[in-house]
Image (tube, rainbow, N blue to C red; front, side, top):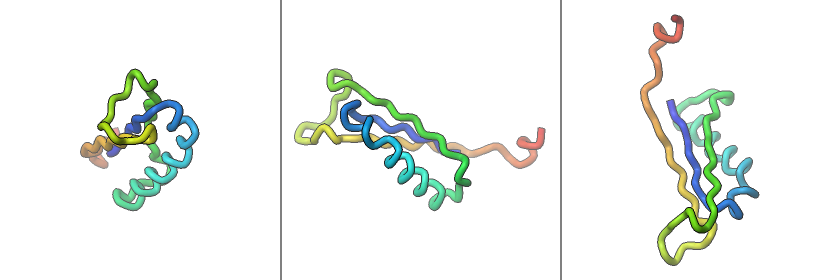
Length: 79
């Protein structure tokens, strides 16, 4: 199982959420053989005062975090 968190500045992320979600999900489907309907993404749009990132980076600095854990067995899913 995989869940994805995307962090960035509100002013930047707000305009690219659908595109980023599509790209991330296509990568997850290819790498992990996920079905199309298993999209699990959360976007965290932060104000500039809430998001600290390395000096020299632009306001497009974005963090993509993948949390992966073993899924339930087929037997457990049947219950």
